[in-house]
Length: 120
Image: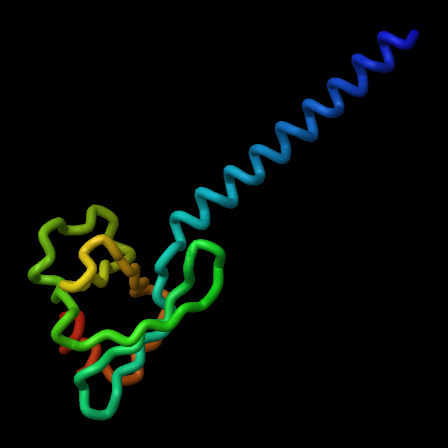
């Protein structure tokens, strides 16, 4: 009788552990996919600095101010993106950081400034 109860508790504990590990793994992988996803791009009045508002691994908003000369234009990037639903924003000063910009779900208020930054 006691052994049957222990076996049931062990099975319940294993089930809870499997669900917990699976959910943590799912959250970690989705955080990696959405890391450095740009939500807003602000350009100052003199058109020499850009402010990128993006989310980090933990889902918090971060702002980074970048000089226009530091941006690598899309036509100078080495590898084209295989999936065409986002565009990479790369920097000369920090080539390891890759910001992702979605095209489908956004509004462009100044299309001339956007074309000057990222192309058509």
